[in-house]
Length: 219
Image 1 (cartoon, rainbow, N blue to C red):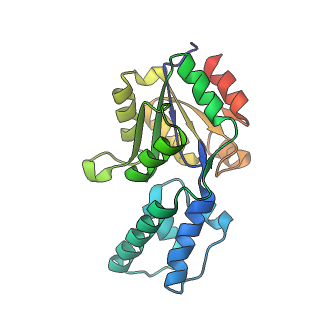
Image 2 (cartoon, rainbow, N blue to C red):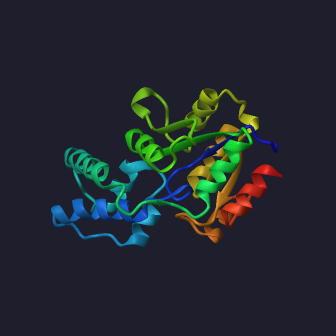
């Protein structure tokens, strides 16, 4: 079966290419209020810490807290209704999940995206593959990544020890999350951060394709 009993995946930029739907949703809200729109690379750089940070970075400086809460809520509502228009799994992800499932390896998803969206996207794109899916739940006292809370909770749900899990992500947030949880981590280069950036952020292991990721997991 390999050295891991469970694989915990980040979602955006790791399993799903969500950039277009995220960018479109942000710009709909910015445009509605006459704010400057953001290009795809700007929005890519804002991703990784959930929708609150995404909107804080995308909105102009000096927004009042009351207005920010309004804009954030409108963004989340719009995204809920439009998050499946251009989003798709990265090449090779579904066959990889199938191979892990065949070998009895448990699969979890841990994302700073809001919880409803995480669960709905997993149900749509990976039906029958995901054993546990968790999005941002700070209101329940579970701190978002890079705090270890979410991955530790997911490991508990899956019934596995931390040392028997591998965390797979595409950002510096994921690297820190795994370090804070005492969990092995592998960084993928096809997501929202490039290889040079990930190396600078201390990536212990890098993979460039899902075939490389499968080999890393199963070796």
